[in-house]
Length: 330
Ligand SMILES: Cc1cc2nc3c(=O)[nH]c(=O)nc-3n(C[C@H](O)[C@H](O)[C@H](O)COP(=O)(O)OP(=O)(O)OC[C@H]3O[C@@H](n4cnc5c(N)ncnc54)[C@H](O)[C@@H]3O)c2cc1C
Image 1 (cartoon, helix red, strand yellow):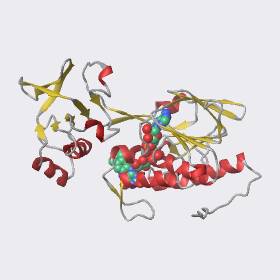
Image 2 (tube, helix red, strand yellow):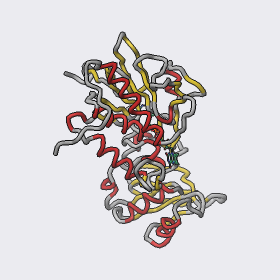
Image 3 (cartoon, rainbow, N blue to C red):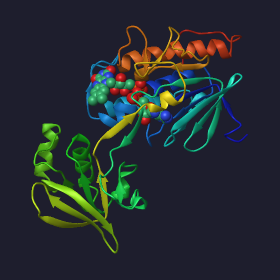
């Protein structure tokens, strides 16, 4: 059966922490589940914005790094191999259409059919803040990078990293031992990062290019960055193999408005079963509102079983409806 003919029980839109836990829970309830995530990696705000932060308010963990929480959610999603969700990344859902009891989801790559939908898009679709320059977009993923998919892509190369926050510093320190040479370009002399990381920056081999802005990029025999001194006219030509830009992310939840779902203060209004005004479409996590809603990971984790158990009863009323997690046979 081709992917466009396959009918999923549940499609979770958004692979943030709440979408990931929802996909695990749906698998545990033996529902055929798809997760669609617009970014190249699952993890949402936690994985993208604060992988290094120690989170203190997720039940069962006195403290867990954001990145570790995402890794654990990945493991949990795959704990029942027969019911592990199908995951589609780098793919944004742009439209949801209902025909009788079936939903068609249109994405930036194709279409999926599903018997129910769980919207878990958090603050919305993330996109990296790009270089504010006119440049040839075909250079993206060849010379100019906004994500690191595999650190090995930078092995032995001369890499410039642009940005002054935690993410730029982390990548500079990570690539220091892998790349041939690392430059870190920032428009200020001060970096905004963990004190210990900033200290390592100053002690290692990373060349700090401050206070400079990237004024232009050109690609020919060599890939060159034209750096301009902030509050000055001085220009500097920096030939590199790759430029990794870390200017942060923007989030856009305008998709919600296009999907015709009932909203309140630009958030998805849900009832006590986490169902939106449209039967079969549920909402959980940061993108929803109801009396008493708090935008926390723990709250989103609690909303997932409410939605999934409700969906399971509706799709498979004949099945026994267990309340507790299943013992794994090893
Ligand atoms: C700096 C910071 C620190 C925080 N610290 C804490 C903390 O200590 N404890 C805590 O509980 N909470 C904390 N939070 C809040 C917490 O991160 C959120 O409550 C949580 O991420 C919500 O999870 P979510 O899955 O609902 O949404 P998100 O994490 O926003 O994930 C939504 C996902 O959906 C994807 N998406 C959006 N639109 C589409 C689309 N159309 N198609 C496909 N995919 C789409 C997005 O790319 C994203 O990956 C913090 C937030 C920030 C910004």
